[in-house]
Image 1 (cartoon, rainbow, N blue to C red):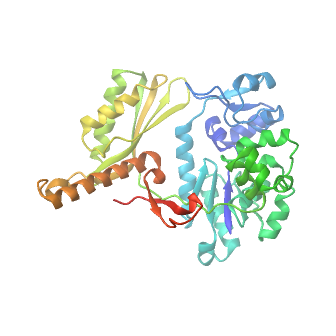
Image 2: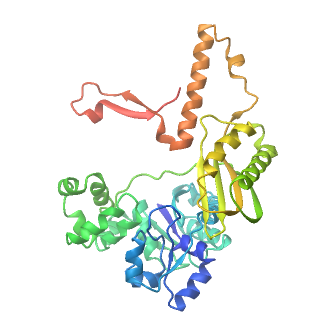
Image 3: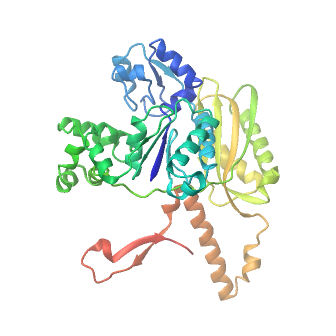
Length: 411
């Protein structure tokens, strides 16, 4: 059984100052939407229910959104605070033992099978998840759904009422229920969101009609996303991919007045020195960092920085981070620096520990160590699938996909 935790309009609630503020604006009939990010695509972000009543939806062009709803109020997005608030919710859910797969801020999944004995059955797991949401301050808006797959649990959560979970127990029951659901539910999956509009133009309204089209027709028209949409409509889905909880160190500094240029560079140097002096670092190098700022005009800005190699030299860190600081779109009133991933200890002596470079065996070990460091940096920058190797499993097969498979590379 898969559980889905859904917090409606989570990003908008954080940007507007809380769910209570969004509810108050909804009672007044005000239409809210997250403004486009500075320097990004001119498209609105998450929208309120009043804006949806005018036909405004997430990802719509700003000009079209204002044409449909001239009274639309744009709220500056706050991705930094959103990430912090969502991490608090995710930590509360992981505190009950859940191996969480966060899809986006406000939406996450986890398997309940391994938690039944800990919490006394599926009902106990759902109750524990509800208590975790209430502890994180989201009990009044959080919705919980359960189903045999990730997509079935998402549909159940979307149709659930606050404080009351909705459960779809069997595959047959879930498939029968999905057949009556609208294809608009595919918009909640990033891989199938682009299919909703063309399916509506083709006259496909429900997931049951989508499943009846057949795999050949969907693959010919939409490719792999079409086949995935059909599998979702039939109650099948890919396995969960839980995240690996990591350690995070953060330093921040408030500015007396909005600053930019050399002033921010000096603040950045101070943050680097503070981060390196933290005892929790335990002498480890820094492999991935997040540089963020609160803008004077409203909203926040963040940039993920992965150097070529794990560093602990303050001069090199300031140089690598200073290049990204130049991308700041506006003066900032606060600057933050967080270490997201760590490398080996700065006291490791690669060449001395592995042997002399003149020795053939020592040279091979040193080369393997450098290769391992490069693989670690690539995975920190692009994810766990960044470094793979081809493994020949069936060289005599006539199907190319069966001859070779990709597996994680281990130097």
